[in-house]
Length: 449
Image 1 (tube, rainbow, N blue to C red):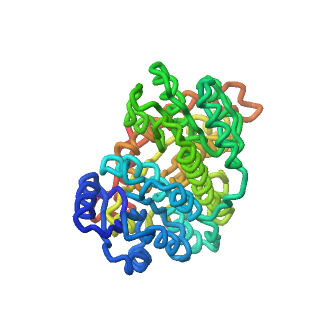
Image 2: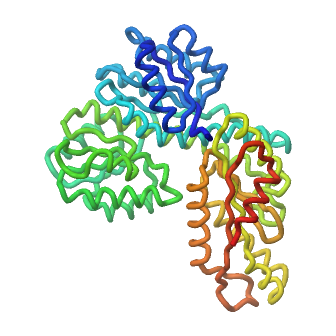
């Protein structure tokens, strides 16, 4: 069975470690356990896991281990989640300063909650891992990627928040507390107007308060708007809710919330976790930024420009297949065929066909995650490499892409008076044992139609 992610679980209590390992492995994670505090850093260095789950050790040893991991160049960019930490304001703040990816205090560290909170960190970890492999392929093509700033961000930089909340004394107090931490916050009462603000402005995180029974639809609407938007889908969301009102906590997590906290007026905890969400966004940006800088002419298609060349795509697919087989990881590939371009070339010439393909290439690049490699496969075909993506999710991506492209209009040269609607054919394949890049692509092409 393909593994969702590779985790190193550090925990002094062997019984707790065994229980958590079993729960995580049941959900498809590959988990290695370290119970020796003195060996944790060395084991992380050697194993290079996707994520480190750092449990309880004596005193403040967990924070000391976090600090050591972040100070080591070989481990500094690996996301670390603190689990079972006691509820202590000073420890929370120190964990944020040390760039913890998430904090689950002792009263909120059940196995179910760990699995829930892992989801967004897992996506971040998968992108980080793919970035380092992408850099290796780039080096083969003479492109050197600077990854020294991955996982590095400035705590002092002013953060911009969108606070979505009905006006109340409590919300005013929360707003003042956020400002007191040096955060720049804008309050918007209506989730529908908040969605428009998110579309038009750049924010580092969203804080949503849900205190009324009828807030359910509004909160889930906004969550859906964020998660289904290719520009916003990694926007961190913190939801504050009354314990006894709808929607249930897990419903909010399934809807896209990163952290859900009780509406108990603990402003210290709320502001600290808000800072954690801001840092999550900055961490994500530190991973995404190198993807932009490596997109140079040496690896791009010479005619279309915005997607990878066929030779680079083939070389990187070879590396991704090897990685997936070695780590027993998910990997899917989609083939996107544009038969409409054949008609355009016949009716209006090769130049207009290339113009259409160029515009579709731009759209494709903007509709996938940065870690999904889009390249040209042939005259009228594109390929998408989707690391850490199971087949069901890959099919959803392909279906969404085909739907958007087929419902869009494309303008070509002046001699083409009509708006062009395209026919899009997609096929998806996921890696199998003993696969090769050629076999994987062949199955994706055979899945078309």
